Image 1: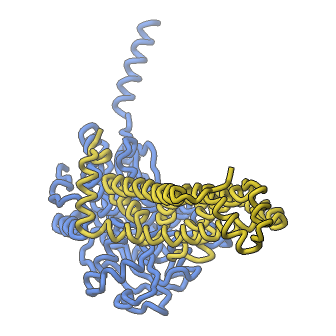
Image 2: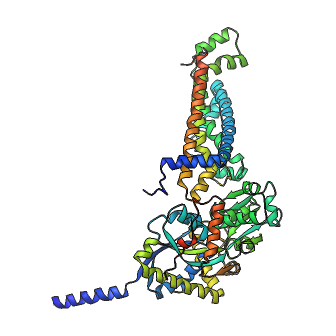
Length: 226
Length: 326
């Protein structure tokens, strides 16, 4: 195998260190990180809210769920051509792609988490005087938390998978842009370096939510859910 | 009877060997940079040299072509100099430049509102289109930044990378304020009413735009074919220099065909399909100097510049890249 096109792992590590020391990798990395954090936060927040609404209110569930189910199979990257026309090739493009990608899993798992709550618990809470905001914040959401965390975990890792594709489209900075630059300069070592970082970050984000999930439930908060 | 058949076989075999044409597969960029190839094909210069073009593929950018040079089925290519250097140094592709094709062939266009002078590229909030890093177009962008002492970070953060047909589309739709383009897209932009702010000639004297490269193994295995290819291209270049009008017509014909085959032009202008006319090609050719000379110092200058910009794994000597065996 030719080393030029199939660089050994040592070369990839060497290049990663070299690019980091020069500040090139850090600059691209932090751009991507910021986009992932913003995009994921927007997607997760909206997904959680819509998931709670559709899980709690049967009427809204009936009207919104078919629409969500219809759009869910469309891959986030599939929205890119349309977003390019709507928002142009701007910072908003990769952020919106990540937000769309994050929205659906969080929305679905939150909705199913709320729907799977033992109704006897809700009845008991109501009989004890809980209603409205109190019932949602103190009983329903905590009960659905394991499902919400599952959705967050899935979409947080996935955000890193879609950001690279979004950044490959003419965006000047970011790991995806660096991958494209490396491809045009025939530098597979840099491409692999970026891909390893993406894989590590995807894993890291998933682990963060796993850690938060474990910490949440080890504090004695019972999820109540089945 | 058996003797007659044997004699016929022997005669056929020898005649076949004597008149057998050498075959070579070619890759080009579909723009005026490959003018010599289109003219050689049209005027039968390859046939006259007993050279058969086995196949040819046209690529939208030199960068895309450089990535494909690694493939075994491409034996020779009409390609911009910078991607050739990238292929040789970073990709480890064993090749040699056997001929130059033209000087210059790149420029900057804008709608004339936000960018009237190269110094305006430094303005914040601009959107500047350019072909990807390591392309000839990109090098002209980087050289412009260097020559006018612009803030590199500011300019590069405004640059959106896309191929020339997409840049034209974006420029027309107002998504870009300016773009660095190779010929003949520069002429197409001019035809659409955009203003040429600078050309490669203004900022990089003697910049060797494109070259004809051949893989080392082809040089070893098919020296006769390579020699024929070189002769045909030299004749075509001479013909272009002395027959500019006819050359423009021939190049326009081939580029319209390639553009329509690629499907890029339809989205630019569905009514006219933006077929490339002789006028655009003539304008495009006027900004290019067709020559087969390969100036070693110029090649070295480009290598050094690319190395300085962090595009190369290491610096090489131009003499290792240029074939001088003819």
